Image (cartoon, rainbow, N blue to C red; front, side, top):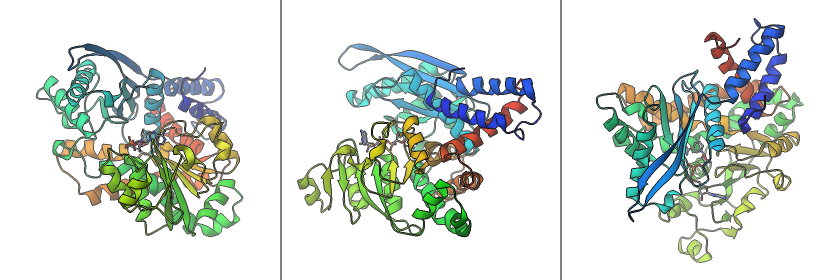
Length: 461
Ligand code: NAD
């Protein structure tokens, strides 16, 4: 069967590797085994449900728009569907399916008891007034209200949406379903509406933590083993451990700026952020950028970095202004990708110099470019592992909403790191011992977890 989604291709490779491993699902032999794997492939490669709707939205100028909107429910074997709602003009059905698939795989990998879903509305939110965005958010809930709910499908923010939209949407859900539990119907809400402390920082903190845990904890604790290890990725990790590291970060929004701040204030690794970029520019300083000053600047300039010499000198920020894409090609030890999909592709992969890359964004490297990086021993910490902090803390928010007991920020981060450490401890020993890249290794683990659950549900035959 041809798999539709980008993530589906990696799932297929993982299934192929598992088919040959007779210790996995040992009860299935010969033809039964082939059939069980075909069931797995079709379940994991196709969503359970795709709903498309046109939101009827009266604009302030009197016109009426019908805006395409989606909710894809990929799989709920592990728990209710979970995934963000994106407001962006390029949203299309295949992209939403891809992202919903990734959510199923990501949640299972980290033992978060949710399935995978995703939503999208085809608009550029910058072109609408606050009142119109409120109507769009409410209409989205009205049109999809039958399939949403705290035990069915729990949306969260994504590109173009935030706590304001989640508050509006939860409010509408409550109006449509009076008397029913509603706090767990959306996550990423404001604190007054039951949002969790630490949700905003969770993804960026988790992204940096995967790097820190690999280099500071895992490699150091197993140093002798790493020195004897011929695995190409083990060599890359060892080369980066216990020495000063320079970092470039693409994207300086929620994920990128928090990852930058983690690096800036990290006491475990000797890292220096020398370059950051956003939709306009790359800023470079070989001695290290003043991350706190840049965050202060962006918070007063609608999220944008300074783009002129005057703005830099007025705010006493020392940096060279370079082209937007330059951050990808600078000679840094580590590159954190925290902007958009498909940023490193077959046509530019040869210009990338960093030997370690962390995916803060979803799918920032194309499959072809990923294969090339892997052959060259470049160690990529993939999205499925690195950027799960947001959904993990969303799970804590959902739990807190049920218990109406709230955790302190310190408790949230400690639980977050504990959960991510458990996943990494499960994966890193095998990864540094076998020929697969870390992405494939994570997929093999998550496909095994999902397969065992589906087998016990009696879905493989
Ligand atoms: P954001 O909107 O806060 O920030 C995006 C940043 O990317 C901004 O600095 C923007 O200027 C920059 N950017 C836009 N176009 C660019 C371009 N062409 N080149 C360089 N930079 C560009 O978004 P975010 O919440 O930080 O999310 C970033 C990525 O991480 C997205 O792909 C998102 O899906 C993914 N992600 C986010 C979370 C989360 O919790 N926020 C969780 C998982 C994955």
